[in-house]
Length: 97
View: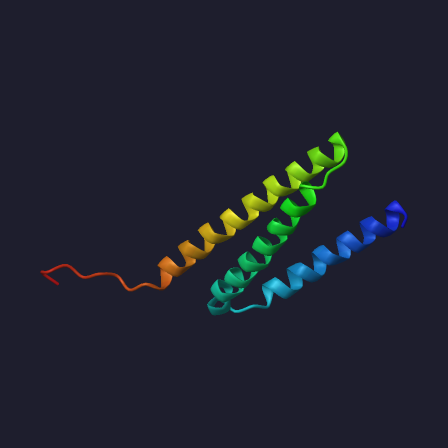
């Protein structure tokens, strides 16, 4: 594929992703994030398996970067999900309330 075709597909994917995400109601964001975290966890395990078979230093460097960014994505997703779940918890009332 040419560079122009790859960039075109990337830009179209960004626009489609923004449209899909903007149409999701707020109450569905937490379950959606949980499912996305599970998918990224599987992708991270696949990245580790591929990294184990790297033949050159370039492949090893790209694999390490991919695993690093994948790990950031998974951890960040769980942090966001945890913060969103905190919003749905009721506030505890004090003894005098």
